[in-house]
Length: 84
Image (cartoon, rainbow, N blue to C red; front, top):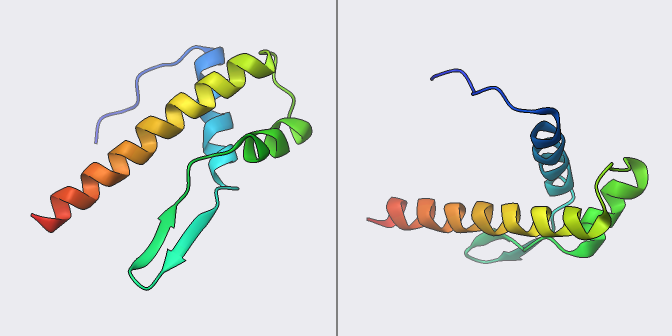
């Protein structure tokens, strides 16, 4: 596996924040398994209350929701690949 490319401090902050916000993600459990729910403002708020960001809340929300959409779409794509 190749080394990760270098990142600037703000990108590192955003990716680290997203990773930690996801630790509070809620899941729905059914007979078919457990499925992640999209992040809500609550999970983001819980993290930012304990770990303030130099960015505005609006910007943090935009980034967290965008990363979450990409992350959830990648999970769906991985499930589709497993079914084939």
